[in-house]
Length: 77
Image (cartoon, rainbow, N blue to C red; front, top):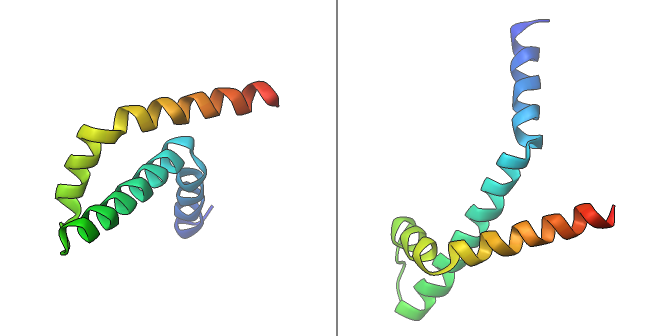
């Protein structure tokens, strides 16, 4: 298998992994939080501030809900 094709296969494997999908979902939530908090502040609060604020205030609840949804979906299938 040529090197370029092997790299493409690795890339597809990563993009299809549950871990990567969870990373993207979490990132999307952080970006939503950044937008909401920036609107409240009347200025861009920056990704780092939004990230830390979201982790402290929302991450544990968000992860619990995601895990519950995943278990429910798995049980239904």
